[in-house]
Length: 340
Image (cartoon, rainbow, N blue to C red; front, side, top):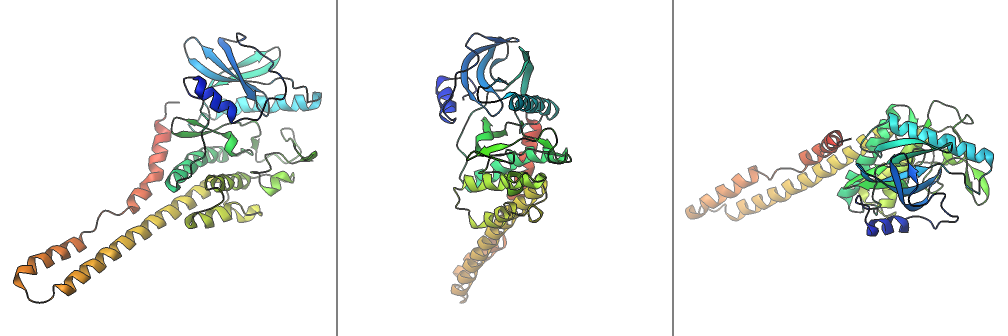
């Protein structure tokens, strides 16, 4: 939805979500602290989402952990535990790659929180845009991995936008990587009526769906699938080695964490830029050699032309390699400059 809460933005948000199967628990005019509900936006994995307005802060998104008619008491308790963990993680991991937490509380014993209003948008498909998109998202994931946390639900539906910056939402399935499987905080997904490991089948790593131990390599798998989705499954040649390794079915064959993936992607882009630069120099050199060959006869009036061509050959245009090398640093600087 648009940051200003426009009707067009709201329609776009609703179009990006599944149809609502049961009625909303709250209505326009209901209060959550100083936030007034203005519209119901949809059902999430662990709650309902509403558009709310604050007299001073403006429009935002409210997420409430509600009791769903399709859940028994045990599942409801698990959903509330995940919801509280999500709020705690948002509060503890303030980072431009995640939503801004604007408020939290309880109503009737049910937890809720308010975050900034973000905009849905299609995944980028141009190679340069995908590069920048992945680095923004992966920087947030690297932030989690550095703190021993695995997101476990990286997918296109969990990417919204703050202006031109992608934001990774829904930390409800995030887990301390040091906690063995089967402890509190684990949960299941239902696929074809069968309980499988936590996560979204399209994006989750095989060991995650099988209910095995999950490490940061599981998020690397999901990031690789995200890149694959950006290109519609038709990966450019330069991306293939990186995505193939990231999405290996064996976690030990993937990049260890998001930081390793970032370095691999950045290195590939630098190498490609260097290859383009070398090709440009080769073409320029061949042109200069051809000019020299044509002008090698002792014709005085053309000597200055030959000299000028040789001088041009010795002064090629600035290489794209340095620009590619700085691109990741620029993204890091933009993340650091974000008002958070």
